Length: 427
Image 1: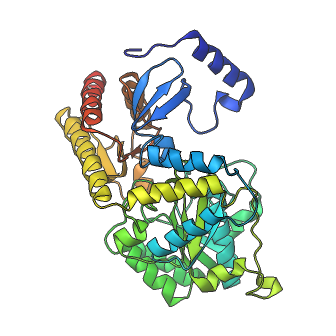
Image 2: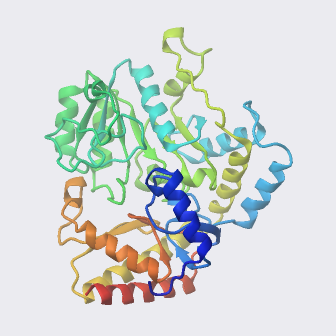
């Protein structure tokens, strides 16, 4: 493998992973390397190979790894205690900052994972609306709860609005409570909502689905029809929150939902997520504000953990400074444009899709507008490209490039050299 070596220690660790972890991994990536440390926009594996990092922990490290301000804040808190299972100062201050920043947020509840956050958001909508069914979009990713795993990545998609489970172990009854619509198709979605509005507790959507931006008028149309039937609209902003703008995708696109979920950037690299939204829905988390049959308990040992909360506050303080989002967008745009140009010059059919802070390349001639259009891509070709980049010192996940404030001009030049070399080999 050009540019990479492997020492005996890493070989032994990988063997132990095969022995003790199903599939030899944590279930996230299947790469044959073990990461040892990260600093800024770079990570190093146990063998000492250095990579420009576009995975960024799957997005949380928007300020870069081990940012000194975040590290200092966390270190100070470690001396004061790591968890209390009780209300703490920094969880309160982080909730205050989220309410100040996010258009839909009247109040906040914390959890530890995106899977929890979306699950609780859907449950809160059910408690408020007193209906059971959730409409989600084919290809939409909302974590690993049973409802989210309906038609997330179906290999053989069903006719709308029938859901397809994407995992073993999901009760068949869940299929009765989820209906599926096509992302970016407001006409079909509106027809489905018109037909099922009496049954719907909520509509949940990634405002930018994976890396597919919303079509002009799609989010606005979705907001209009859900308001018409007083159906809560949930934006899953685990990825886009504090990434596309300080107020998230709802500020970036100018459409305000009733509830949203937040994660990744808001936790500063620690396990913290949030549900935020309108008071009349969020009050169902408060036993003193609703009847007993409308109360929705939410208990988590590490919810609002002070170490995670102070890391989130330190991260948001950095993101709030003037010029940060302009820098993030400019850096990402340069990578997007260069990758598309190099692929075009090599006459390799490909579409670089997304927005500058988070995007990917799909090897296809077709325009990418929804999940079914992504099925036209050559995934094996993408995996080969990713592997070639890894061998050349560029680290990313199976899908998505995440950009950070820590990426430098030198990082980009190394990345462009890796793009050129990998594309030449593919050609």
